[in-house]
Amino acid sequence: MKKIILIRLFLIILSLSVLSCQEYLDEKPFKYLTRPNRLEDLQALMNLRNLYIQNSSMPEVLADNYYVEPSVWLAATESDGKLFYHWDSKVQSNRTWNGLYNSMVYYPNVVLDQLQNFKETTENRVQYNRIKGQALFYRAFAYYQLAQLYCRPYSETAKTDPGIPLRTTTVIETPSVRATVQETYGKIVGDLLLALDLLPQQSDVPTQPGKAAVYGLLSRCYLSMRDYQNAGKCADLCLEINADLIDYNDIKLDPLPFKRFNKETVFYSYCGNTLSIIGNARGRIDTALYRSYSNDDLRKKLFFKEMLGTNLGSQQFYGCYDGEYNPPGVFNGITTGELYLNRAECYARDGKTDLALADLNTLLKARWNNTVTYPNVTATSATDALEKILTERRKELVYRGLRWSDLRRFNLEGRNISLERNVNGQKYLLAPNDPRWVLQIPDEVINRSGMPQNLRDQ
Image 1 (cartoon, rainbow, N blue to C red):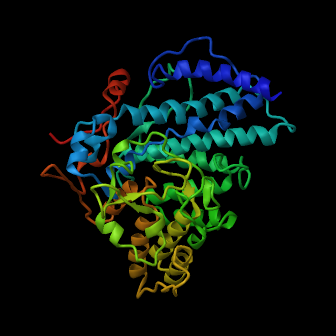
Image 2: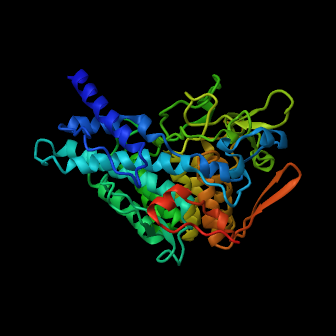
Image 3: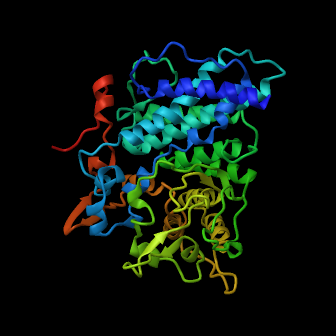
């Protein structure tokens, strides 16, 4: 039986791969697409983890957790992410756009389209709902990533700001048009709320979502929208299902500290499309960031490793929550650590200082060297607590692909954060209101679809 399913799946993937290579947003498909005729075929398609690691490391490339030496930048190529390092105004990434649309949007749409050919019955309802919920979650996860790169951050102008194309079918003839930012986030939230009613509390494997993962992604999405009430509520609901934290005192360096699918992983997602400019042979951790960790904070030892050779004193990132990749890259999945920080931030913004500090201290105790007394974090006010939580947010979620989104929402709140790169003697600045906080859509997509491009200053 397993062999038959694998043969069916191979035929499906073979035909779909040919189709997706024709540029999902525009080209017409071949007409001989193999049609799955069993729910097991669709579940097998959802089980193919390699289809869902086409996440982009671009948010980490654009952010300020790392730097590269001038000689490294000069030797890098455009495909390494060289021009994105200093936010070149004209650079585009077909790889990022196509990787998310042609895999993480397209294949869930295949499943959702094909599910319409099946009759939901009492006997197959659990399986049917699980498959549908997984597809909705994967597509929402892709849309969320695209929104962080190709849309302005969610603000009071979200009703009119251009969003992304919301492809909800594999029918290629359907025109690709840009929704608004409000419609984009509305679709993400709407799909996730539908998935909540379809999925079990927790999945059997972290690569597939359960309700905990849906709540986690909803919390992340609401945080980007600065809807802190719902972000905190969803973080709380996720932590009701799984509140486990790793005691970093139990972690050994052998040689990579963290194992794949550890108990903090609510949903596993890895950026297989990692741009090499941030890799540990090139990217060096921002010096101020590294120095912000106490010597008794075990993250300083477990997240970073001193560069070898001529770069003594420079630190490289080694703390990926997927110890099977060497060199480690960007894990952008959902963890309980992130959810504790989400809830703590929302508590602080709501004036609930004691609850905010309780969450923060719960997290930090699990990161602290237990041979010394843990210095309980205190605050003089909710505002003081918020600042301490945001400081720890950056330290905990380094190389998780979240810093870029955080910076965009912080600047909407008046924090006036600029990013700066020094490349070969030249200074590059990304000011808070610069249009380069939004990437350009690939020209080939613009030319084929006719949709409007993200503007650049002349």
